[in-house]
Length: 261
Image 1: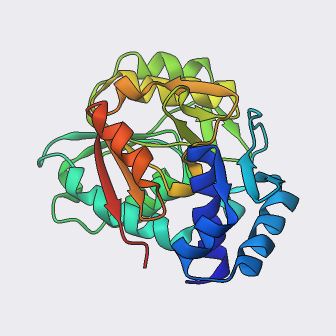
Image 2: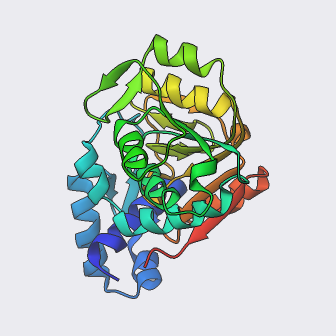
Image 3: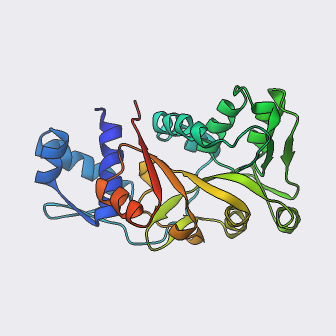
């Protein structure tokens, strides 16, 4: 396992469990205690965890920082591709309708949708400029890009115009991305306008499928846009702590765990 992948899993485990121990992590990842200490030092420097004697504890603050699409696409890229492949199984029957939220993992799914045998039969609605352009450039004709204000950092359409249009729509399946997922705060993101769009997708879909790599589990962003009760399926990667997976399943959420290799 590469150091970056190990640190990603340590960050997720710390966020979910609240506290991690150097000795236990050393045994879990089959590396020396000194290697784990270096990992925790890097994560502490990045503000992901707080180092304490013998281990680390999770950061408790609500996050507000957002990263560019380019930076997001480089983060956990292997896991995101595997998650997108698993999400294909939840596409509706021919002639069905789909909501595609803005996000890099959803973008990976959109690329896969374009090559599906039934691609031209689906009606697709999105608030993502890159996703709409990608689908249209691949020849899909039933693609609707919502109108409104474009957020530069995410290239997502937001605002009252888009929300009014969404109020008239329904879809068989909504594929949703998120900045964070916790049991108490649900799905959350940094921007209130983008949260409102995500919430509209969730509200007006018959089935909600969340594409969420394990780095986002146990974290909280400022604005919650859906509770655990709103979710039907969560697709994540093998870095997700088993305790968190079990708790989601206890709340009747279907959890799919993919191998991010």
